[in-house]
Length: 84
Image (tube, rainbow, N blue to C red; front, side, top):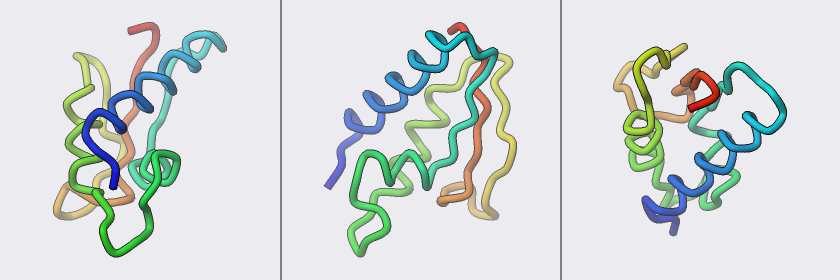
């Protein structure tokens, strides 16, 4: 089962890769991030934790492009501007 640190590390890695590639921003969808980290989909998924990590990583200027009705779900999509 993934831990907070697992989501943080993978998100940091994705942002670093986006920066290295010269992107101006990186859009991250919670379901995709969780699939990369592992354990999703599955009966013991950690989607609320994944979404919390994504929101906590936001900096001024970053945007929530879409959010599920309750705020924590696989369709949460956040645009992180680069470089950070």
